[in-house]
Figure 1 (cartoon, rainbow, N blue to C red):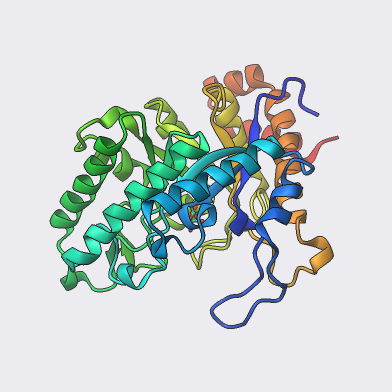
Figure 2: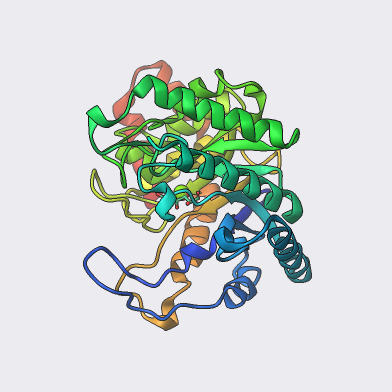
Length: 346
Ligand code: GLO
Ligand code: MG
């Protein structure tokens, strides 16, 4: 395995999913949170990602005090297992209050709900010992172009970010862009948009990004370039590795499942720029195939981590000097074959 392993790995409880899709019911029974947590360390993972209501179920019906108490209880459980909380994300796409979006809803009451919920999410994160909030802005976009104003929506997103930044002086917000699904178009579709919006906020230093492989591909962009773009600004604070076959629904396939060469280049980008040296985690936002049997339920996580570590070896043993020489000679044909041979092995 890799000679010096600096990577820390994590997944979320939603990554051990039951196989439901818009056309059919679950194919596996739900597993308890405690079961998922008990597996985490054994599989070689260090931390868990949380939605606010993964941490405090039925959060909307609970008082601030109840929310804090339950978060404290979870913190004790996590400490007992030696598992860290990587981040907490407000789930702003489930409630009847977020049907038309959260921060950009056309209904002021719903916008207030979204902000309040985000502030509670920050309280939970603090109790769980992380300063990182992830915003996947699922419904901040339009189904219908005439229904919202693009400029007003950005103002509303910035207002929400500012309220969150003011709520806790230490909190950092990583925006997870995705161009579509569930919306036709999202207002923050790429890392470039996320980092541009950060500049409008009251404290741009505390707004960064999370890159997900599948989301880059859905935007028609190269995940390795997106990684290097964010890292040029020191803004890559988290990472959702997975895979995606072309422009369709978000597939969340195991890392490297569709395009091994692209997976190699993502890992090479992380290696070159020392991702993880500031404590950042490698998270796998992957799902089991719908066909997966109960006894193989965790294999997509184990396999993604294994593929990642094997690609770390491939990145470290890639002949960078020869690659530089071939690039200088503009012999891209030879460089292409060299990359292919390297991945194929001897
Ligand atoms: C969906 C997203 C989702 C987020 C998660 C954390 O497309 O990738 O899984 O990563 O909700 O906010
Ligand atoms: Mg994700």
